[in-house]
View (cartoon, rainbow, N blue to C red):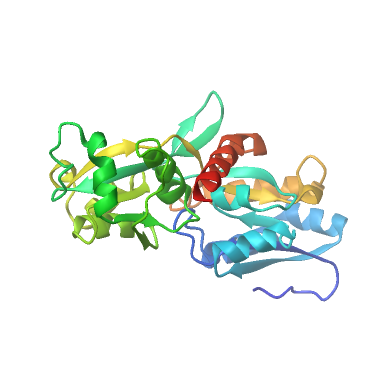
Length: 291
């Protein structure tokens, strides 16, 4: 946590997960953003007009902790996964969607999205099968599938829903949980599990990092792709939204400029709660299957 520079005034709290494998927005980025906001003339003026003394960066250790604290409106601004957002019960509204290089963008709907993939390694009987989808129930019954933790929409929730459609509505029973999509890819390629589910683009990213670019088709085979998933949001409590708050408008502009100035960071695209309705419905469908 960053302590406020003054002892009086309102403190605007910026919450995030300490290590988020999807959004990849760490404490260092948010500390730098905080300093940028404090040095921004428009933000400084708006802070004075609305009685705000400082911004504080608050880290959480788990998705469960982040969701619980968001449900209690403990943060004014939060960086979270899409799954975290639809799981919490706070009053937040989506301000931005994070647009990473491997995400897709629909200019008509101004929507950033990605998807998950289900894939096998070259030792799996599905790798050379003419109808691999038909063999999924048998493989899932006898082998592990590597997946990201249960908070992940592209690495767990959506792949589970896709697999359930081919296995009479049942969820995978033998799961090897990994900390990130990249870890899933390494687990499958190294033969620790014959099958995996991960974020689209993670396979290519791992292969490139290992100097194996161009060997995708020799090492793995994608069996299924999930439905589109909305990108990770940046959310804000209603009192600070740009439509009602001078500070909210200044912070919105300053955050967009800060992220755009660093090519290693995602871009910030406009967002709203409606872009997450289908995700909320799919999470509810998953929870119904998991009962």
